[in-house]
Image (cartoon, rainbow, N blue to C red; front, side, top):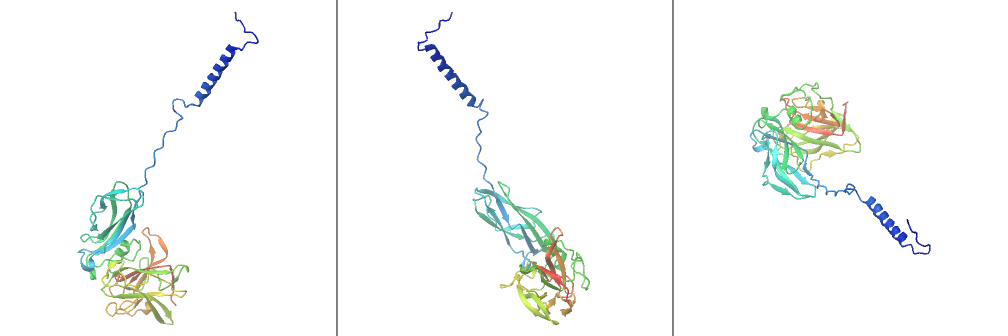
Length: 350
């Protein structure tokens, strides 16, 4: 039998039971807030690895030279820059060239080496002498602890200097990275008036985009040595008024991208008037001015300049751009001087 306490008692048993209930509730609610078995506790996130960015510039280089690689046939040295643009050092163990030994480093650094964060390294590269002749290609890669950028290399190795040892125009445009049908693969092309290959009739030009200057740059020269001026002309009636834009320098007469005399222009503003391009006589070679307009030519070949729409390596036409191939002599190789003319459209001569 249960005996109830009096009504006026301090209820010691009821007070003890309330404290037990409160403690039980606290334990229950606190227990519900705790992760069961640690499944809800987030795992620590590791710090990300520093991004390694080692680039190689420029993306492509073009060289020329001869089989012996001496004198005027020596390949110019060009620079490849490895740039560490990350915030961590990069260890380099060397440099490799694909496709055999057509290219090499000039005065290479001692490997292995560490390129500090933000630092760069310049490497001298050239086309080596030897065999075979013709167009040669390779990829330069730096070897190290992480992937790095690459540089595509192209070279044109001639059998020798001048005459029948020179490269054909088809090899020249191939080495430069253009896919143009110049009308034949051999050294000698037709000297007739009819267009060959991708050639078009373009005796004169006008600027295409008014907000952009016109560019005229020599990309090849295979001729006798000597200073050789070139430029543009406009017609005043039947007379050509010429303006020199630049001069091909001495010593680069058997090369791609030949050197220019100081002060030579590569861009200019021709205004709204139609103009042509000419190669000036220098008293030795050529002995007469050579024009894109046939009727002005007095040398051995009347059709002395062939004009081709410029096409990139995939054969896609480059808008408002043309390759101009000059033949001031008589043999028909059309690579004595080769130019790229940009931001123009052809104009029919009257």
